[in-house]
Figure 1 (tube, rainbow, N blue to C red):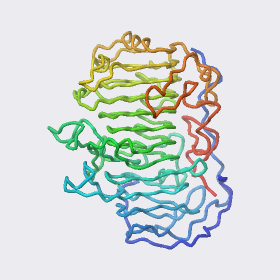
Figure 2 (cartoon, rainbow, N blue to C red):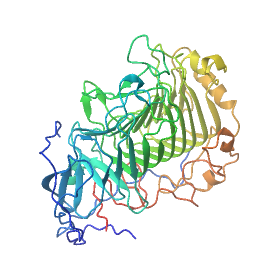
Figure 3 (spheres, rainbow, N blue to C red):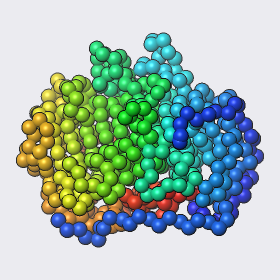
Figure 4 (cartoon, rainbow, N blue to C red):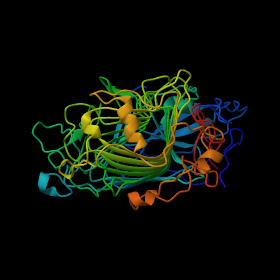
Length: 524
């Protein structure tokens, strides 16, 4: 069983670690009424220990990549003193990062997994795949500052599989130093997965959307970091039981990353049990490709919680998105009104069993636009802001027109067994889509409730009303990805999947699993 403690004295690992690494690597960056459901209080930080809980590992482990790790000495924070091992800026050989007591890994700027193999999985484009996989053991903690981020390039993969007891944590240098508070954000880039599945809004004029000629570039990356292709079942690897904290650094201009950004990832990519904490941009953003993700938590994002763009085909189930008080934009933003609405593949996002908690007085909670196809099922949308934010806004005729297979269009947005708890349920959108028209689309679904009162417990866990909702949509009819449930919302009280691997923030708290997100857990 994992022990989390800020007062436990840990010795240096009994394993023999070899001090290693080639030359030093310099970082380029710096750093309705409500029932028993009051917004969660900001968790009380753990007390500063009177003695160090962590002592540094004796050196950096040897890894398979011949560049090795760079031993950068130690860093000290409230939890004690840690050994810092910097990764090479490009990982050229399949490599595993093992966990040792008192050891942290640092991302020194943009760290690429492998070399980009181009949009096709062969050498026809003059490139050949390096087939590099970065494996990260359970309980490993990695950090970065400023423009540091991790990019898994096309033709390469990540295998970051934590456990309930030992999640993998990506975070910031300030978090290690103990300098963060409940509103800290934007302290490093984030995690990017770049794949070869189809995208739209091509960077090259005249390229045909959805083909190998259509590529896009990771927002803000100084060095070209491309994604896109025509391989729908492409795999960028696996991420499971992972926290990504305090991300969203502005890499260039007005472009910043999210906690997790996927670009053209294919259906072979395996994503589940992901927690985004205080991203200064979107919590997660999915650009094109085919995305399947379960057990997703977005806490405290400062822009949109979940943003989907450029032709993505996305399936999500068991999703919590909760804002901090007075901070954030929409919970859902779907595509853009940019004149490219009829490019194919057309975005089609389906979300089942979600709990959305809006805490900022703003324009809307859910905005569906840009000609996208979208479906919400067995979902609770709750506006907990003071003044009242409308639940749903729909923009553009292209978004609400009838299904047309020739346009890869499945028709207007779908709402089935969706509960609304908002002072105003609908608002006018752009392009002549009125609140009444949006309401008519909502009413055409089955089992929807516009006068709902939630009974969430501890700010996220289903209560009697969620577990006993009048009509539950059978989401297995949507495809094999989806699991049958007998409740709306993200977390049934009979299966609290948030337990063990999550951290607590001012947006949503799960009960001191790995502690407060502003603290670093000590695993033993």
